[in-house]
Amino acid sequence: MLDPAEGLRLILACCTPLPAQEVRVAVAIGRVLAAPVMAPGALPPFDNSAMDGYALGGGVDPLVAGNEWSIEGEQAAGDGVRGNARGAWEIMTGARLPDGLDRVIPLEQVELLQAPPRIRLLADVAPGQNVRTAGSDVAAGEVVLAAGTVLAPQHQMLLAALGVARASVVERPRVAVLCTGRELVDDAAQSLAPGQIRNANGPFLATRLPLAGVELSHIETVGDEVEAFLAAFARARAAGARVVISTGAVSMGRYDFVPQALACLGAETVFHKLAIRPGKPLLFARLPDGTLFFGLPGNPIAVAVGQRFFVEPALRTLLGLPRETPWRMSLAADYAKKPRLRFHLKSRVTLDAQGRLAARVLPGQESYRIRPLAEANAWVVVPIEAGALAAGTLVDVYGAGHLESPYIDRG
Image (cartoon, rainbow, N blue to C red; front, side):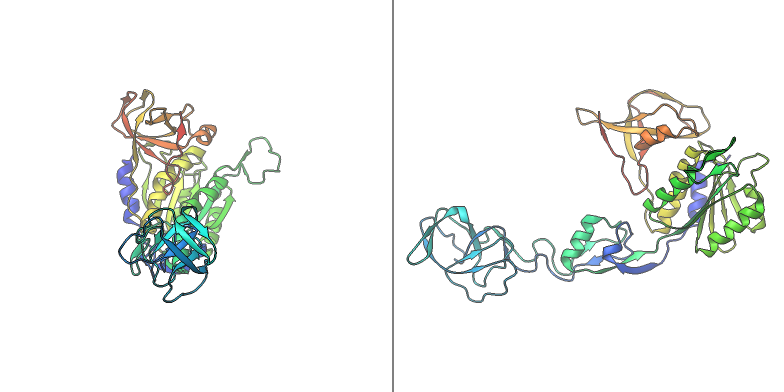
């Protein structure tokens, strides 16, 4: 069996970043920036009021309480340039400061007087007070988002405020999923015949992979025949897939036909079997046209582990992202594992009353048990050389996906 670190190295050696494409920012959430974004203008674009009040001018000196100012006009949000303003101008939050005025006193710090309309200051007001100056958030020409940023709603807010409508992003990897097994039933409304089971791997990958930054171009379920698999593979390639993931049929049984099918395709099997649990029979191959193939074992947690720890690192490279760095956290309780294998453990990250993070390994680590995965919010990875680990030992912790941090429980 191959060391998993060496297996991952071989996978990544077959991956090169995908080219860039320009897309509308409005539909770019979750995409990876291929180039930095420069601010086309300043933010705010002009000096504006931070609150409702009165705009005043006074040069470098503060205006002192007791002074009276005649009210010369008003400036609402959306009003244009007011040149050479004098006196006091009633101003609304976000409104552009009239030219010549440089400070704002809040409404509650003035007394309104009549005949003629004027205000009396109830507090001193210094130059620049309650004014949002042009460029104080973002300067024109500044790099606001670096290449490699995974666009999130807060980035969309920034780009919208700057008027950036399009951005250069890395193409999404096009991925196909082929679930094998004549025992699988896709239709949840269909009754199961003796020996049949419902297909859980397909729906899992269909939802998990897009969260990892891919375009799912094809998914189907096939039986246990080489010919059917080859036909499905051809449909996956016709749909544009450059990464194909299969589930099942990679172990040593009579119906584990995937290696034979790959030979028919002229694929190079880079490795078959890793020193991991779950998912030991994992297979990785490369086709003559460069298509990457991941053959994941059929047990659902083996699928989850193979997807998270071997497919997703490949996707990161295709997306131009750096290697993922795990969290380091203390184990909440003792844990002992068998030697010679790297373990990937369904876990929950918790935060105690003292603000300390810990990772708790969940019961039910067998590769067929799905319920503990539904209860997990993280993975604990225990290296090959580790044996018995005491509570408090620092371990590597990964979120559910490479673009997600663990959701933290409050203990």
